[in-house]
Structures are given as structure tokens and as C-alpha cells.
Length: 266
Image (cartoon, rainbow, N blue to C red; front, side, top):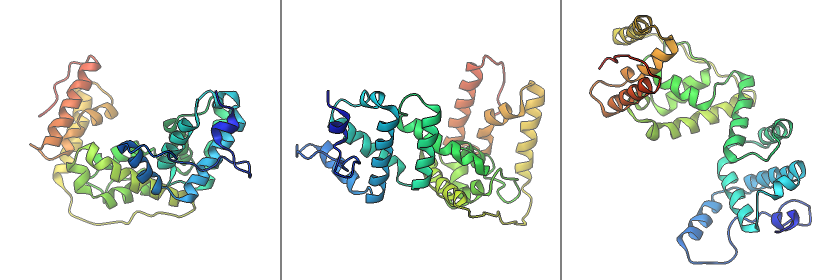
């Protein structure tokens, strides 16, 4: 097993050497893909990831060493971390590393580290990315009248497009919303104030009908308004569309998993 210095391939300045792809050409498609992906990673992001790994080695010691057997493993890990963290500033990453040091006994996975980064956004009243996405989808039919939890949710929905949020499946539209929302979150954390513009428009009676139906469903079926809104989320999608039917099927499965005897409207 290699020593930490060997694994991190330290340079003279004491930081890990920024190696991102294999130095030995293999001719495989995987190596070509890795090289292309690595070319998209900025020097700044590589420096940030080197900083993160150097600090993790100092914080977790032999626990860090046990995560990687070879230099190739850590090279691949650094590439994946860089592909995931390119949109974050150095101050955000340092804050997340400090939170790891305070709360985690082992080096976090990428997903755990991203969750920590996003949890730090909560200090600015920002909901998590997926919670923001759900809010935007559910109220995409009334963006100008809904009282948004944070203006960033509104502007992310506006950028992606309310029609897309109403009609497209999660796998198609969520990545675009995630990118737009997290860019807005960074602006908020850097001190920018976002103010949702006030629009006046014609009230959509269908929207009111849907909201009333959800409220009545919650009361009649003796379930919480939150659960009713989740189960009847498909009603916000166009009637007869594939996406509406898909969400309805998910609601039926959720009802069954909860052991409830509920009849969902078509």
C-alpha cells in the first residue's frame, strides 16, 4: 500500500500534484473520455480540489489513506470531485471542509460533500435544490401570484421556463433547473439581493380549482395538506399528457407503499 505522499504525488510546494488522467496511453475509449472531461476542468477548480484533498489528508490521517489504494484511484477521485465542484467558489469549499472537520469522522463522499455545501445555503433562507425544484413545478401555473419561499426559486423557474416545468419529466428538466438555481444561490451568497417582480394578470380559474381540489382531498381523506399536494402533484400537468400519467402512477405507488386506501382523481 502506498504512503499518503505517494498517493497524493506531492509537489515541492507540499500540495498534491494536479494529475487528472492516466499518463500511460491505453487506447481505450474510457481513457479518451477521461482526457476530454479533464480538459473541461479549469486550472482553478483543479487547485481547489487539490486543496480539499490536502486538507482531508491532514484532518483524517490514516482514515484518508484507507480510502485509496493507488495513485490511479486518487486521480480518478480528484477528477470526479472536480467535475462536481467546478461551480463553487473557494470560500464556499473552505466552509464545507470546515463543516466536515467539525461533524464527520471520515472523509465524505462527493454526494455528502455536496449536501453539506447546499446545507450551508440555508443561512440565506435558500431551500435545497430539489425542494426548490418541487416548489417551482407545483406552482409553475401561477408564478406571478404565488408567494415564493425565496426569489431564487422564482428566477430559476423563469429561466428554465414555466411551460417546461409544467410539461416535461423530471429527468429532462431537473438538470437545467439545478444549474440555474445553484448559479442564483451563489449570487445570493455573494451578497446580491434578488427581488421577484410583481406582475398583474388575469386570474386562472383552473389554477384555483386545482388548489381547492387538493384542499378538499386532504380534508375528505384525512391526510395532511403536504401529503395531499404531493399525491396530487400530477394534476398540475396537462390532462392526457404522458408526464401527467407518469406522476399519477408514482402517486398510486406511494399510496400503496403507505398502506392507505385512497382513490386518486384521474
